[in-house]
Image (cartoon, rainbow, N blue to C red):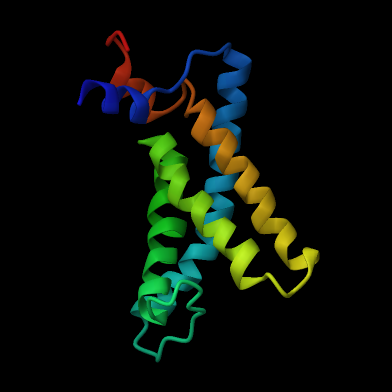
Length: 144
């Protein structure tokens, strides 16, 4: 359990400049993705019939719910820097599905943005949240 906590909440140890860049990256990517997720959230809970791609064959409602989980909840976690490494994984998977399955026949122009997000989520998952995060506050004073 201690190793799991270490991996999930480890904010990394970087210079203040890198910590600042990680904060900016988390805020910008999290807020931008949250704007995509809010529309999906409204569609999921809006009462209208759900029309959403079903790339995994689990049903449109389940696919939409998974996208909402990723794009809303995980984006909020990124913004506040809580469980950042773990929160980046569903976002990364969502963007890979968007790029490689949903938009596979649409050409690179439609795949480019999800692939850029994928790259950013990989970086966040590897680097962690940095010092300006709840992950840091959770681990502050603990020897990870």
